[in-house]
Length: 294
Image (cartoon, rainbow, N blue to C red; front, side, top):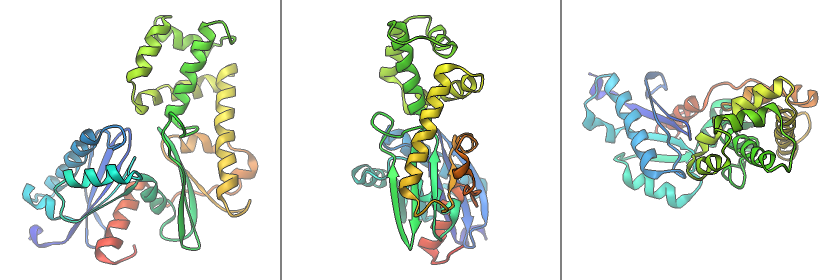
């Protein structure tokens, strides 16, 4: 019977969405589910609700009764989980008997390179770098777009809105990109400020596609901003990689977009990720609760 089998849950939760995979004891995926944001820095309650929603749906899909949910071991990789106080509060608000909460960067690296050495630049709404060499795993970045997360989508959006206000004030020369932003806000700078005051990182990140689109058309500010973003990534890679020939992955929602813009010296050592963050969460669930390396 289904109820008698061993099951494990892997969860990948970020600023733009939460995904869950229910697998068997061999790590074979049985069901998948999605829900909303699960960034515990942005909102602990929203994250909890998203996690419960997608985990419950994954369990329901294979016909397990709802009361079995709390008995399934779960390994989560969540944005904001590096903050221990939030991590602890989340665990207290979830029903799971066996739960491990790690950062989304941790499961991303596992999905990208497996259990061996390697590095991953994870660029999406935010940015963070996770790497493991000689069995020692470290993290760089991930401080939030207000003071960090350089080159992430939210950072791009914030930089664009800031430049647009400088253009409006006549301090900087404008470009089609900054004019497009002004048009979007009815040429009213107060609306930009009102948006910024209440906007989430994901909301700021909605401007990222516009930046790349205009940059590809030669927009002066778009080109400068993308160049600055790429330079941030290359500078960080220079610091975290053991040497100039070390391979690395570019993952996350903007990873592939930035990968094609890196300098040739970096592209030569760029490798494809083995899997995604959710597959990393599943792998770590099996390792942690079943003692097996997939």
